[in-house]
Amino acid sequence: MSATPADRPRLRVGDLASMKARGEKIAMITAYDHPSALAAEAGGADVVLVGDSAAMTVLGYDSTVPVTVDEMIMLCRAVRRGLTRPVMVADLPFGSYEGSDEMAIATAQRFVKETGCDAVKLEGGGTSAERARAIVRAGIPVMGHVGLTPQTANGQGGYRARGRTAEEALEVCEGALALEAAGCFAVVFEAIPSDATAAIAPRIGIPVIGIGAGPAADGQVLVFHDLLGIYDGPAARFVKRYDALRARMDAGVAAYVGEVRAAEYPAAEHGYGMSNEEYARLEELLAAR
Ligand code: KIV
Image 1: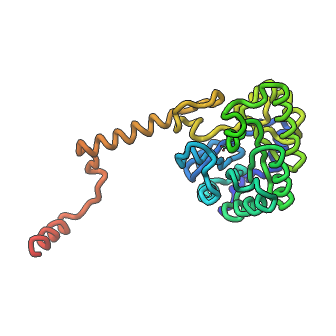
Image 2: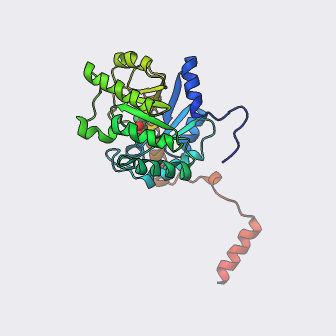
Image 3: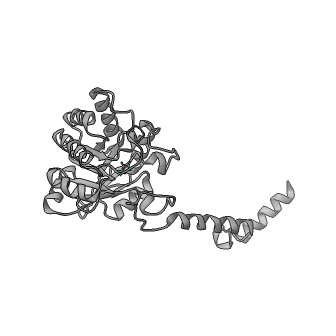
């Protein structure tokens, strides 16, 4: 891994707690390959998550459930090579940690050894908090994730906001507190009413990173393909599109295809040259064969 330039000191997971203490908002973004990692780095993100949303954004699955550890590891390795300053977090895929503490530790260790990530993330409170505790005890920092947890959304009433009733919001709070007690260094709040976050976040000692959880969180996370408009289909209400790259990508490819068909590409400046002497010799050689 390359040395960190002095003007871009590498952030550590512990720095996020200091940012929270200073009231500095934490900017987190997902990345799935080398170009998206370079963009996250250049844009100044504090935390880069190789989310299992990769299943949908880059691998074409229709949910996050099918993505495998091997697929995630390949993506994480590409991201690692593009990052210097941000904390890099790898999402543990569905089915790779829930079964037992031993399973959770073994999977987390694989991610750290094979990708160089700084931390792993898992979804859910309850049993997941126990798995988080085991991974933390094995020396690996863990980020939790409560509210809407896409890996198990089907069994929990689908993709909908969580915590719209007081009882459900209390469950979100209990889950986050369990993850904090397990030693997690931060927790993602996904799709939770802004007022619920405002009530719960001050009770959580670790940084709360929101996605669809309102402004009271200590930081925000968005999916790379959503915020840049690489995915431009129907999106959750919390998605803000800062660009429309999908339309620009389509237009760029269409322009190329049009020029190839019209024999406008390649033009002279896109080709390599050959001296007149060599060209004359080539004609002689071709005529003689
Ligand atoms: O997989 C993912 O991208 C995530 C974020 C939405 C937090 O878990």
